[in-house]
Length: 92
Image (cartoon, rainbow, N blue to C red; front, side, top):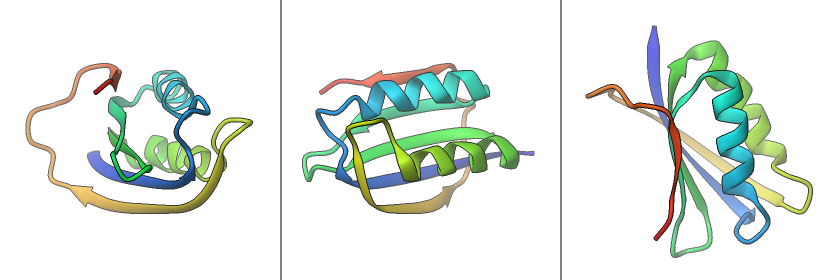
């Protein structure tokens, strides 16, 4: 069953390749969605897949790429409306 999560990652997660890391791992896992930086310094991830794939992505979000420092990860489930395609980086 497909689920959609909103994941907010706080810490040193901007300017360290966190979005590219997330995109690479999400694509490897077969997860659709997107990742973007937020004005408050966090990274927001919207991810859609089955529970097993989402758990794998969440584990990776807790560690991040080499130069990141993850202080907190918040997760909430979102209702799946229209299916997401691919996994993209949103640049603002």
